[in-house]
Image 1 (cartoon, rainbow, N blue to C red):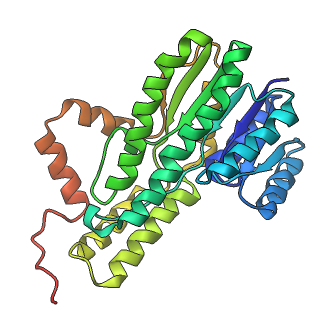
Image 2: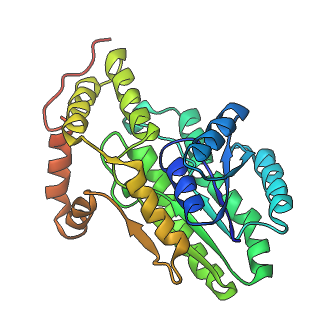
Image 3: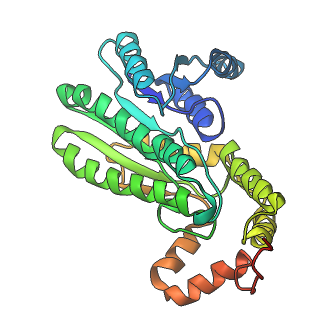
Length: 286
């Protein structure tokens, strides 16, 4: 039985991927950060008559990642056949409203953590002569937007890293694929919205009114697709005999195509209108 490690498995897309891969007969190991979350994931699998195993790991902690994959190597008798780098975090806000500390933490979770995991599993996969790495990024890895710059930067970087890794590892039989979800009903989506609410209520940002407009645009975008829809695409990438380089999911595919072919001035204008940046805003009083 092939073993698959799924990071960030306690909720949203990660949890749905764990349950779907277990249904398809894989030996699934989900990484979570606490014992409580591990028990909750195992209970959820039991409710669906499936069995999954768990390992405690914080993707932003190098020692935690090394210890976790040493444990996975023992659990699987040599290391996983595949890894799904799903764990991630969101950080909304204008570029000037995000601190360096916040940006570094985001990059640690969304970029350096997944890269670290790739380094940990590649030697095992190379010795075995094959394997699979699926990196879950976002449509933000293809198209940036106002108040999403730092998150998009982390995902753009992961896209570039994955493209390089795909070419570097192909000779060893290791396939690397990207999955780029749009808006889905996940904790991360609501994390971003909550951050915008916080920024709008703090009354200390030049973009305060625009944050409120952006929240309204997000609300009109609902209902978002369920996490299970993205999970099915992730599972396609894991299970495909010859996976594609990238899989884009959600209604936002049309917007991505528009950005590829429409003039930047036009798309900038649309984005500014959706986020309230087309209106002249007086500077804050000091």
